[in-house]
Length: 244
Ligand code: GUN
Image (cartoon, rainbow, N blue to C red; front, side, top):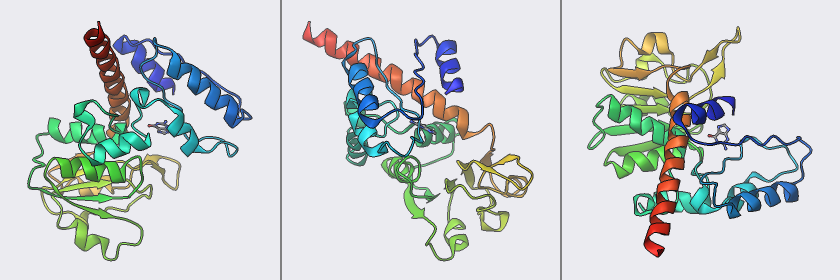
């Protein structure tokens, strides 16, 4: 959250960090969200996860107005992603996979016609990542904890995105020479250092392009959060302009 507030300041977006006690009740939180939904000065609302056990995250996510869902977590944002409606003005893309897509484009990694393997099937990264790559005409496989012979599947991939949260999930022998490898994992190794899912030091010798942990995808998540917020403000001003 500190990094998100700082990024807003640096980019000239007004942000307010509301801290609540971990004993906050679900009705209290929903009432706060309702107030922010109704506030025309607010273009984006983010409820930082994880939440304490008395609060159902699904209820909280669905309480955020779709037009302010800059996390891209709302059911209708997910539906808009599935049906290709986001560029038509409905909902938002989840920030982490959207950031990965920008990184691949910035590195000029060809997506159309490529074979992409996404490891992990979370609602926040794996599933939306696969949909975004599919929308860009990649042939996409989603692998997960019950996938047999992960190595054989990853070896086919021109683009590998790993988002499982287990160190050394992706090793050099699994990588097709020249493939693009994006590490979305955040783990601690045996001596407490931050590491990703990818055995970076060895995979870097085989991959054509690789993003590290830390310093890879993490900052992009925040960047896309700001991008979604600006998009929300632009949509609001377009709506207001057209109703004048
Ligand atoms: N917790 C960790 N990452 C995120 C994120 O991108 N959004 C929200 N709401 N909570 C998080």
